[in-house]
Length: 259
Image 1 (cartoon, rainbow, N blue to C red):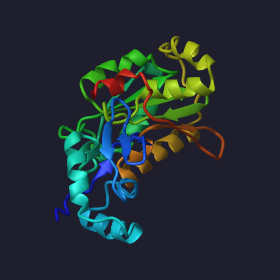
Image 2: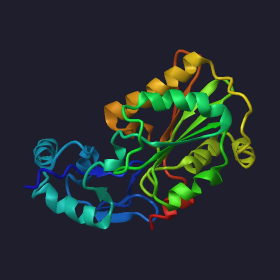
Image 3: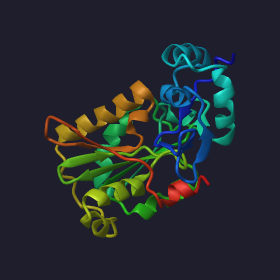
């Protein structure tokens, strides 16, 4: 058995039950799979860490009715793009290229200093975009079309908003966040069309800035940034950070690019 493969569902992917013996992995357009005993349980075990040997052991213990090899179930799904063979290397920690506006430069310099290497990675290029105030969403279109992973960081009044970390066509983007927030807060849509004007002065307290930098570095060091995928983390003077999780927007072009 090929134990070097450690499969996982693409971050943000949902599994929908269509009937007694079929399910849909993803929704744009998604991949229809025929369910056998234990298939759904096997999909829930995929985390990019467990190899095929461990998956085989776990599924036969969890689902006694599962028969055959997990590779026979997973390899067609990997070939169809419904399952990833492992965590993409883009999730690893590496030094990014930084983009920022004028007022965000002091924060960006602090964040840049937290990385071990001052030079951006050539093997796994990605970008961190720091803005004072919510950025125009169109500013990220070039990254989506160039397939460049990126992490927006917004310095907003006394808050720092982190994420989402975006791997184009594989994870939800900032517009997906807008869609999710608009469902809960309808006025957000009208507000988002006016984003893009930088604030002349950063009002975020230094303590909050350093706390936000610690959150970013901790995420990169512990899970390669996966905890920043499909979520926005808000750091403030409050003792608790606020985490908002979301999936792909139904009509967002970042997901349609994968079709």
